Figure 1 (spheres, rainbow, N blue to C red):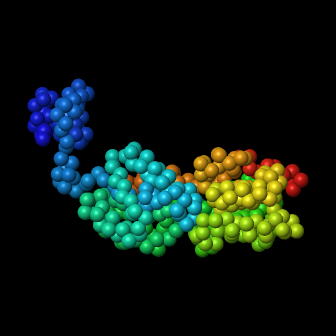
Figure 2 (spheres, rainbow, N blue to C red):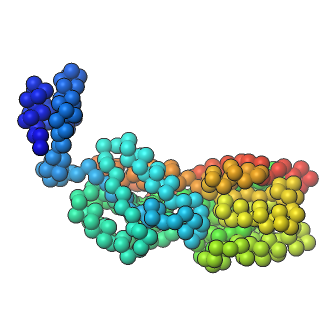
Figure 3 (cartoon, rainbow, N blue to C red):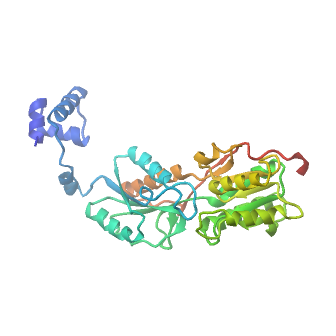
Length: 349
């Protein structure tokens, strides 16, 4: 195996100069750097980074724990935007730093989480990002001070730095735009009762109505999913009740885009056209759904990629500068992707 002395001999420089090129910790002339890099490539030299890490007490590694890799598409209880987008955002941000992101998958087995935390610590990672599959409260092991932890798409009661979506804001601005298009009878089909997103998005829905001077009507709010069955029986019943109202809604807001897709199908089996007879909006802006439906679906964006990137930026800042994020948790806002599934309703103004 080639050594730093072999590289120095081939490049015609001192071992100290090779070290400067490897560590990028002192100025080196471009021609000298090129010669060293060519010698490294020719010899296949691999720096002893582990030894350098032990001397400096810095490995340059940050860990990420997720279940997104092994989890089957659509497995999430909330059937929302795949949490792989969170991982992709984290990877993109890590690539812009001096850190290397090491990703470990739980195999969709919660009991492996503690083991992965220990493994990362044994391999001297400088910090860890934990990714949840949907917005929720978690209870994870307490990390030592020298290994900061950032929660992604989740939060805990210990005020651990966290990055979560601003679900309330997303639902509010979606409903505000719907109201701006003339609609006042706006139904809301929520996710499961008890879910964090269900509560926050319902608050956002009601706040938009309040600001527009529209009375909240409990008859217009239904639960689209009440259990973990992968069928549409809940939606059939909920839509039956909404459409049987003396004043049925002109728009149906769905808890996520997958729900909206099913609503399209149910309405069409009943001969109801979208958006001419009734408009439909979703949540997530899962483009595999929103841009392939006809008509394309208006949807509030769930900013998973931005959230993943923000979590890594916070972690690196904690590692390099020992700074805690402010505020905590950090709320990341998405916009609204407005498409043809909602038409202006002039006669409702």
